[in-house]
Image (cartoon, rainbow, N blue to C red; front, side, top):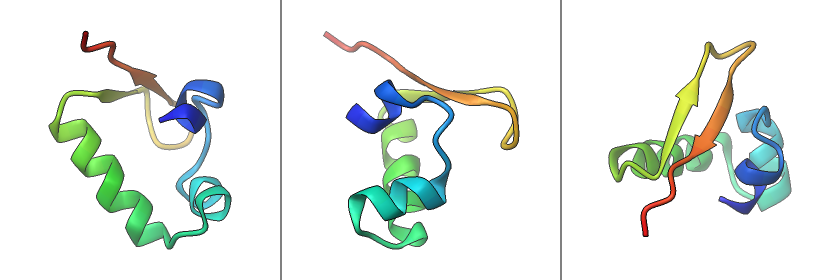
Length: 56
């Protein structure tokens, strides 16, 4: 989540490279975070960005 907070427009490929996991692994974790309500996607795949939801 730190990478998403620091670089909201980061791509799945960039996340995979930074984290040392596959793109499928990134997709799995993104789906999990979205289901938990911890992140949302603002805008489309090409021009959008991630928003971290503060759940305190």
